[in-house]
Image 1 (tube, helix red, strand yellow):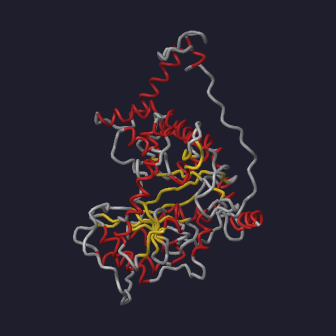
Image 2: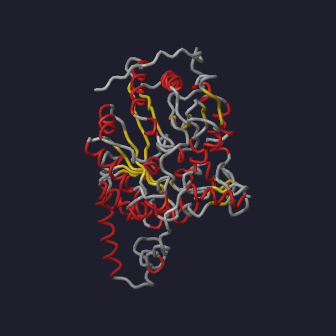
Image 3: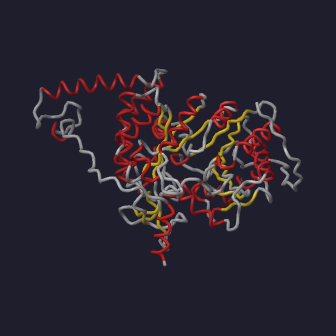
Length: 478
């Protein structure tokens, strides 16, 4: 076990006399100790461009900022479990000693009965046995970014030299498995791998061997100047997943999951949807909650922002050197940011039959118009609407099972039995007979209609890196 000495740093600290009455009892804060700096150059990574907000910075969190961050995070929580979460950029660039100091500081400021959940989102390419042993020793939960099998991953996830990274990521995953470190998979769904849902899902499930995964849509907005620095503009890059494409991606994977994997594989979007179907207070994903505002981001210098997706000047809350973190989290500015998710919904969304499941999704994606011309519709609306309608019947079965104290996995047997009965009934009927499901439609218009074909796949593009794309965007802008 490695011990680390803490430096005696004397700084003027914002003091917390009391927690504001309107402050949340807990919140999630993504710390970015390297800011936007990363050893990769992923083509769709919006955050790489953010370094322009900190000209001349070394992009390394100093020890005094680290201590202030850990201390204030602990003081701000009224719950006895605190999540200390690291992201980037690439957080492993900071080196192991930085995280050893973070562990020691958490222990220094721990309140009686308090526990910590240490998490890190990493591209996995810099991991070695020492890193993996450290994660295991301190019960870290690691998120690994990988976009599917080699031929899909290496198109957009390349290094600074434009070289593929798949083998390095897989090496990192195998090291985590060797040391029995808890990890999950984060896959960004883009315009390329969005056409390959089963290949992506089965690769993660069968070849990686992961049992928890999340699928995050790439929606890269193009600003008026042709760049993608801000969450502004109503056009998207050609790397962005299309709305219908994302709906097809989720629905296809859901069908595989609900027939084979319920109870042993966990997909974040499916878990969140089912929580909303069951009427829970929270979906577990901020994008599918009615309001947001409790998932913030802190930069390497202590600057606090409203959200990881809104690290830009208009959403800057303050610096924890000048004001205590909880005062910023509980500020009117942040409260307004969170309630706007609900209050700014267009009427089209308010009247939608799956609003309870979607709640307008993430505000960063609300930049197109409704059919009647009202602003603020989510770019992914068509895809989410298709997905939520598609899963309604299985979702109702699962939530019914859970209410009766039955395992959710029983849905697989129920669906198999229902589908076998339907197939047998259809064999006895003609295309123009009433469908046996009771819908009132003819067989050919209901359960007897041909299944929709998967969208045509385009040839896979050549690997791309952010540096080249940014240069082209700047040239076009000028």
